[in-house]
Image (cartoon, rainbow over all chains, first blue to last red):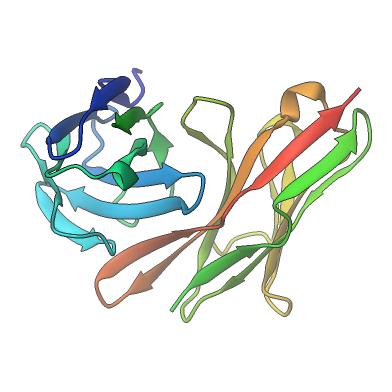
Length: 113
Length: 115
């Protein structure tokens, strides 16, 4: 069974640009959640989708958005990038709606110059 | 409201000695608790989980944790550390809120294992 796949693994952008990150969950999983990991703030929850509906959202500005498609694949978008958006972005999928167990991808490392 | 506090940001042990990584939590509801491990440049891997069954939970790679409601703790232990255990460890609480299930991660504990 394939794990959670995130693309791209590494990317470099400049301030003001936008970026789209992709996450393919484990087959059959309908919940996908996103997290930002930085040395200073640790792991912070961005949002969670279940069956194409955003169920929960963390405390991030509106520049951070996401969506989920009918095949459960998810994308997150960050517009008007700032230096502070440099981070490892992790995606996780869950097979049960109550998020009892998460399966994480290896992350997309974004560097903003 | 829910939160997780990992009491040590860094722990250093010698190979073959016991490991103790401490986690306290607060939650308004009956929580589910997890420990995850992250090796450098990797995603998080589930070590073990507590979901209101047995209070002593056994996980992978010889790790275990005990849920103590009276102390609001969920400390992670291992009898004998291996070099491969060196990684970042995260304690996570999941509980039900008005907007659905919410997850809170601890700040992480970096485990160093010396020869």
